[in-house]
Length: 99
Image (tube, rainbow, N blue to C red):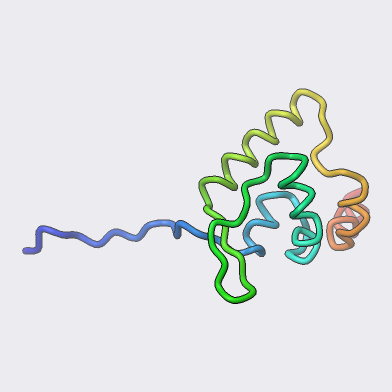
């Protein structure tokens, strides 16, 4: 019997497709176009690593930011700015389909 056990864990880092979903964007491309503004104006965590042209974020940092953002929504602040929505056509299509 081994003293060490292997248990599956969530990955520490995530790429832009996962981050986009958590941040409320319909596509990774829409998130990437808004990323710098999110970092500068809304306290979004910067990428923790970069490998080639691929950015990686700490999942816990992104989830913490998203939770704080949800708390702000409850207080009446908008989650996505109009310019972000305009760039995120997939999200606009989903929103239109639910009306």
